[in-house]
Amino acid sequence: MPFRVTLIPGDGIGPEVTSAARRVLEATGAPIEWEIKKAGEAALKECGELLPPDTLESIRENRVALKGPITTPVGTGFRSINVALRQELDLYANVRPFRTYPNAPALHQGVDLVIFRENTEDLYAGIEHMVGEEAAESIKIITRRASARIARAAFEYARRKGRRRVTAGHKANIMKLTDGLFLRTFYEVAREYPDVQADDKIVDNLAMQLVMRPQEYQVLVLPNLYGDILSDLCAGLVGGLGLAPGANIGEGAAIFEPVHGSAPDIAGKNRANPLATVLSGAMLLEHLGLAEAAQMVEKAVWMLLEEGRVLTPDLGGRASTQEVAQTLVDKIEILKGGGM
Ligand code: NAI
Ligand code: MG
Image (cartoon, rainbow, N blue to C red; front, top):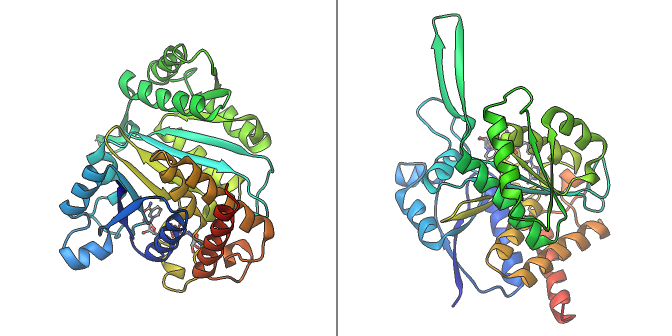
């Protein structure tokens, strides 16, 4: 039985990078049947809404999606599709691996860490109000339930991948109740994983440590706001958006997508870097239990970067999106032949 996966091409460079990723995943021979669904501007034009119920239904049913970036129309009345998907499907864990690849414009070598960002609460609950005319207040929500499930996701990952340590970032010295609860819950969950070390860092110090010695971190678990900020910091450390994959994971569904946006400035020019989407696809394969296919994709990306001949302009090359996809397909054919 093949896996049915919802494929959302998205806007801007989305259709280019997702079709490249699809070709690469298919080359592995992974048994996937795609269900193509619209969201974003493409959906607005055709169906009159940004997130058609049909698309949401497809993800609910298939439980797994590969998604291109979506342009959020500027102006009031449009809620971000990404926020909508996250809320509708309760995708509580934003998972982003960061590693240095050969020939990528990185500040450090040897980085290999994963951020687990809590995705549903904290200051991003958006509960704000004015206090008179001259002051405003935003309410920070932290619950034991949400703190426990993000911590558990991080420890499960560490155990599965043989990572030795999980580090929590927080500001519990100042926000003793909210971040205090997050931190206490983290250590409670840690007791269920005696085989994995647990420690914590105050988040401002953690930011500095990551800039100076990112190689020392393996798995980070963070509340929403700190996770958002440190994710972008880590993307910068390892060479930017072209190589940053991601996933939003919940109990009932998981959506895999690159970190970057729809890049309207280069859309339709066949010059977008598809590697972030390809690597998101590798995460998807692993999520489906297709570890061998996932490794093949990662290995092909690694080889392509190491050779440094077929690269898109953002990585200093002159190749097109399609050429990168074709080169990865060729490498996968070789890896398959080699009986990897
Ligand atoms: P962006 O990530 O689309 O672009 C920032 C810069 O990076 C641009 O110069 C772009 O050309 C370049 N870039 C991004 N991805 C690239 C790739 N794969 N290859 C080569 N160059 C790449 O961010 P921006 O401009 O802030 O947002 C554009 C639109 O994307 C907005 O409507 C925004 O709301 C949306 N967006 C959607 C996301 C999603 O659906 N997950 C995430 C981030 C932004
Ligand atoms: Mg962000």
